[in-house]
Amino acid sequence: MDRPALADFLLRHRSTLQPADVGLSSGPRRRTAGLRREEVAQLAAMSTDYYARLEQQRGPQPSTQMLGSLARALRLSAEERDYLYRIAGHNAPTRLAATDYVAPALLRVLDRLTDAPALILSALGETLVQNDPARALFGDASRYRGLERSAIYRWFLHQEERERYPAEDRDRQSRAQVASLRAAYGSLGAQSPAGEIVDALSGHSEEFRRLWATHEVGRRFEDHKVLIHPEIGPIELDCQALFTEDQSQALLVLTAAPHAEAAGKLKLLAVLGTQTFEGAR
Image (cartoon, rainbow, N blue to C red):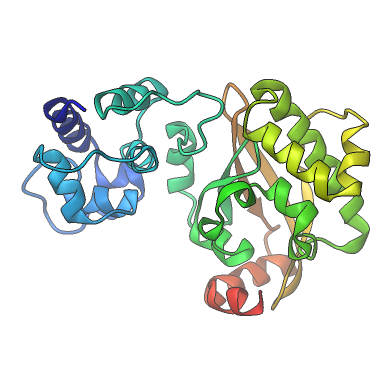
């Protein structure tokens, strides 16, 4: 671990960002350029004291999970993220397999989406980042650990995942989930998290085994969805997806037509927040 290099790297990247660059309010007049330490700590979900010690060259070696959070908070490019890992004493993760890294271009778009549910997904269906409306619609995805981080894995083993869709749409959704996993499996290989999900689901789901044998491949997001919220009921939404160049991540934005019933339901959802949703689950 190169403490001086790590401290200087964090300080310099923090100083180049403005609050508006990361979706924060600028607030009162600032005496120094860039983000404050407490703002970086907030974005990275760590304590201000922990972050301050890293910049002061006296903190413990950060874990790879913590480095991933810092890379996301500082909007680092893939090359900058790899450099951060190396000066912190870790090997840089494989690009496609790294699920803690979020493409800065997608984050910049997400930061500006405040009134529509939006989330960034990995190739394995893991929610990497979600805004408040998405948390109110789907629940807080940060509570999942291990293979359960993948919505594909949860679809076949958690009944509540299926209850978000009308019964008549679940077969099509199952095919889409498997086709998406097949695409990730082809990119990442059998000795990867994609392979782990395939092995786990093959051992527990007859439906998955049958669909996996069809060899359908492709990442699909329907333009029109009906999602069922446990309190509000069915909500008809249009879904738009924006992919990174390597197709490893996608930004999903869900909107309702102006003046439609679903638009009113989204406004109600913003008032309800996540409390009622989590209680219902």
